[in-house]
Image (cartoon, rainbow, N blue to C red; front, top):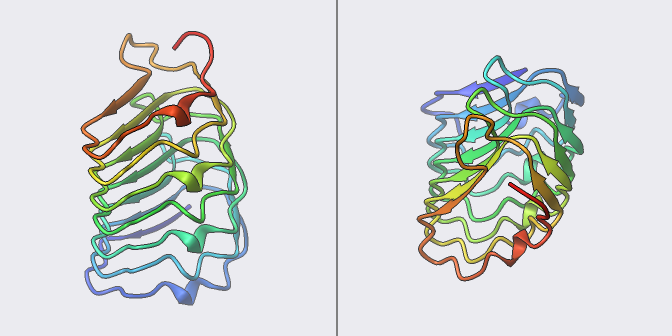
Length: 188
């Protein structure tokens, strides 16, 4: 996998432009307070693995990150959790459109987590997602998120075998519509 984490002065990962093809492990971009974008990762075409904790793609705690469009080359399914959290300047998930499904979950039982992104207004970048999620879906603490448009392709959530919530949507102050979940059918 590839981890870019806890680099207090890092402002660019453009030096990774030579990376191409599928990543056999997870991709973790975490704790880089000055990194504004993921430009340099355009050559990655897929993520075929997951961490021991079941994460495939984690974008977490990047204070200056405004765009994930550098991941626009990614396509296909993720074998583990997709988590986007604690990125206070990230406006959209544009660049993740090529991800078509999530076939696994984290050790905590989650397949998709979008939380604590103070400026996030749209999850439309996830419009390529289709089918059932084997683990939980949670969207919380995104105070500027207006709707869930882009999640229409998710047809079911089969996880939360421990009796917990399969679907969690809470503490999104500007959320006016959840019609983006209209593709969900059957029991949760």
